[in-house]
Length: 201
Image 1: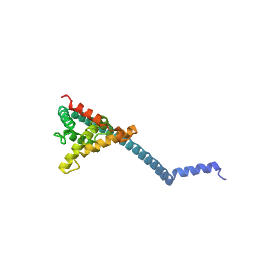
Image 2 (image 1 turned 135 degrees about the horizontal axis):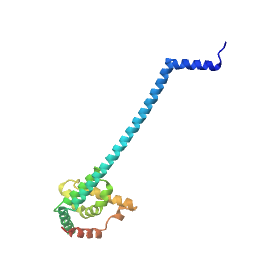
Image 3 (image 1 turned 90 degrees about the horizontal axis):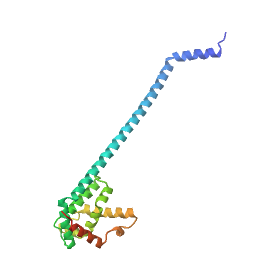
Image 4 (image 1 turned 90 degrees about the vertical axis):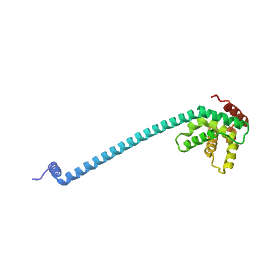
């Protein structure tokens, strides 16, 4: 008596279900799938953790930059700095070859260092100080260059000079014009110095 096709299939399936080799293969496939799922989950979790950390770091950096910008603004408008600005502007108006107080130059050097070290972003510096940096540099560059010559060192207040150059270039780029087009005129600089020389306490 011959078996029907259905009976043979049933016997084959029973034998395969009991075959340890088949069970082992199935177990290996299941473990591989579980490993893939776990690895994918771990990768997603790592990416989410990295993204969260990056967002927190960016937020902290922006907060620090805002604090530094606030401190710089406060320092620039302090009583001592306003006095230094008054004295410097008055001396520059008399076309004095020397400055008796270099605190304004030192302040702008510090701003340039903060920008270079990325402790504050360029846009914030530009918006807060470009008006002053550019005009003070153009009014005092001969004084600074004379000081460098006297000291035998061309690096004095280089940050201040570079900051002014960058600000003029930035403004020219934003406005689609040349640096010469956006640089303040001698008359504008003179008016600026009179304003600074008349600063209130």
